[in-house]
Image (cartoon, rainbow, N blue to C red):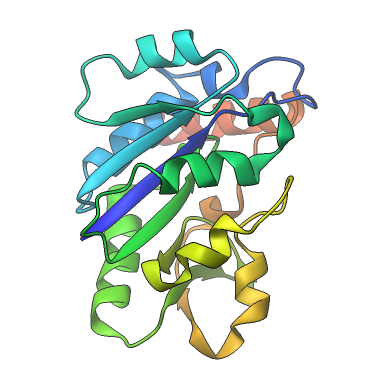
Length: 200
C-alpha cells in the first residue's frame, strides 16, 4: 500500500500569494496535483493544508482524499510532513511525498515510481532527469521515525544523503520533476507550457 502526502500548507513567501491556489488552465495548481495522484495507483491521498486551509479544502471538494490541517505550517515544511505521516493508513508500506506546485507530474510517472518501488529492493525511490534528482519521492515506512525527526524547512531529501545505498534513482523523460513554482516568472513559464501542450 502506497500513501501519498501532498504538501499544500506553505505560505509561498517568495510568490507573495498562495501558489497552491494559482490558476493554471481550468484548475489551480493544487487541483492539478491532486487529480494526477487520483488518476494513479496510489492507495490513498492525504492533503496537508495550513495557509489558506479553508480555501484549499473547498478546491479539494468531494475528491476522495483526506484533508488534514497543520497548525504549525509557519515552522516549515517538516511540520507538514509530520502532519501527513500521522494520518497515513497503518498498513502503508511507503509514503510518496508530493509537492503542490508540480502540476505536470502525471499518473504515468507516478505509477512508474510505484512499480520500481514494488519490484526493486530499495527503500527510497527518486526520479532523475538529466542527472538531477527531483520530486515526488517514495520512502518506505521504515524511514518514518527519521522523517519525523526533521526540523524546520528541512525536506525529506536529507534522507537520500543519509542512506545512499538504499536509494534507487529512476531515469525519467520529464523535466517536470524539477519544476518549482516559486515566483511569477516561473509561474508564467508554466502557463506558457500548458498553453503549448493544449494547442498541440
